[in-house]
Image (cartoon, one colour):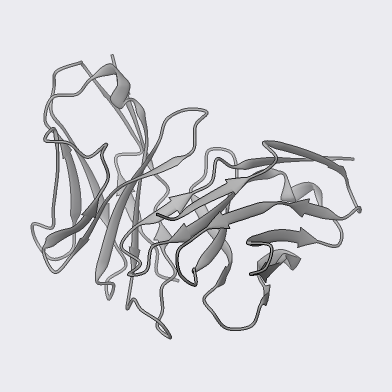
Length: 117
Length: 113
């Protein structure tokens, strides 16, 4: 069964460093998302991406964050200068066709746990 | 804006007894609603979804949920809990264009032997 994969499973970094979290969505999907879950808190939407541009982003997704799909398969989340409060589990998700009567289930990856020291 | 409220942060049931996890939503239009389950140290798995078809939705592992517009609710139920159901459950609503998904705060289900 196709699945979303994420690498690395765990990333430890120093405050102020750049990190890139990688995701490989399901191959025929068109819409991609990043979420984060701070330990003990709920899952928060960060950004959605379609047709090589951001569709929607939350207030969390400030200038320190960026996303791209560099090669048609990977979908990356970059944090330019990490802060302690960026420590969280980051989930990637993808879905195929959206809209009424269409397939809109999001498939989630297993997550990357980011620890900022 | 859309939102969901999960009324219970923790629910504890005995194995073999019914499960009820409550979710109320707020939406300015007919919503699409989802329940996801997260087992410890695992990713999120879709249990079931409501997308304006039948109001009683059946999902995996014996779970089902009923969309009640008059009560703005989408409660998750299971007739008989199993130990393997112990996990955290999230109710989710999407925006109109499915560009943004809003998660509830989660309900941790504990199943006692």
